[in-house]
Amino acid sequence: MKNLKVDVAVIGAGTSGMIAFQKALEHTENVVLIEGGQYGTTCAKVGCMPSKLLISAAEAAHSIKEAPGFGIYPNGEPTVDGVKVMERVRSERDRFVGFVLDSIESIPPQNKIRGYARLIDDHTLQVGDHTTVEAASVVIATGSSPSILPMFEEAGDRLIVSDDVFYWEDLPESVVVFGAGIIGLEIGQALHRLGVRTKILSKFGLVGPLNHPEIIEYADHTFQNEFYLDTDAGTLDIKKVGDRVEVTFKDLDGVLQNEKFDYLLAATGRTPNIKNLGLENTSLELDERGVPIFDRYTLQCGNSSIFIAGDAHNDLQLLHEAADEGRIAGENAAKFPEVHAGHRTSPITVVFTDPQIALVGNSYNQLKETPNCCFVTGKVSFENQGRSRVMLKNKGILHIYAEYGTGIFLGAEMFGPRAEHIAHLLAWARQKRMCIPEMLEMPFYHPVIEEGVRTALRDANQKLHMGPGLDETSVECGPGI
Image (cartoon, rainbow, N blue to C red):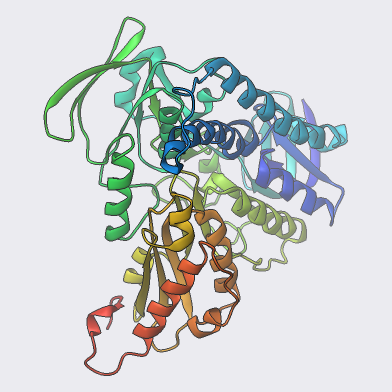
């Protein structure tokens, strides 16, 4: 048994763990990075990068199908070579992972340990059966894994998670996707556009991360016009039949259906990898999920010397958030007991469906639950927006939320074209705490989709300047008012 004494031990070599390790090294050389699984971040291996490769292939196929709308007629239906599609997905994915592995390889042997870590107490870790680590501070950055509902187990080896998709050597004939969250919508739509018979079944009327009922309904209707999506599905039975999975469900008309698929893709969220960490051996207070209670600005768990970052706490499962948290946690762990709040950027979420989904800053639901907060909503439809119609991408709605009384821009929610770019403009504006009149003073080129943002800003501005008794229903308030 090897015994080590270090200043900082980082558990997990994903995005947040790697950055926490590098940040801690700026303050002390006595840092170890512990990893029991495969090296390579979730984003590079099975997350944002391979999913965008699959989506890009789907967009290429879809653009050919849409060409007749411009008076351009391809010679027949596009042929999708599933082997070639997945070959490129895996090849480019491996290239991205290679960059991560190069970073790991450059770490000196004395600063990394292979094996799964378990906390014996707040300062002691057992790594595998070979090393005991005494650490002044610990950073938990163990990431997350796809969650599997018990009912899915009946699918046997026909059950897959999103990670498995990016190891396929060919596209299957059919897939049933459970879950209409970010992963389910992105992969489900991509598979449909690549010729895979796809059905997406979900519950609770949710469409990705969307909040506002008007936008949810619009997005639901738009997606249903392209592929099968039921956000309130009644699933009655799942079982493996031969080399396929049979699903019994009520369709959108309430009619009972029995349908067989090659695979059942479980896309019902992710679970923090904390189960076997030995948290019960520490002084940490845990929430109902078993996750340590922490301060999201310092990443400190209670008053302890333990910090948690990235998907391990399941707060915001986004790469840029994991990176920010890794920097904060790594620095605070290295400088403990000196702990400072780190800089958190304005929240931003993008879903790479078509149309895209984006949320910036405070969501509609958050504002409705914020005490003593009154706000107005500036709206625009992209159905008649100039550039959107030129591109035949004129589907979508943008809502902009502004504080009533001050005009400060609070957040936005969008389902529409080029939302990934509009979201960045709005996130920057929110981070600078701009008000609606200031945003309207910014330049808007013509003709661009961003002109739709100006329309929504003008609508919000008009509502901010309402006089007494003028359409007061335009102002919504949280509790307390």
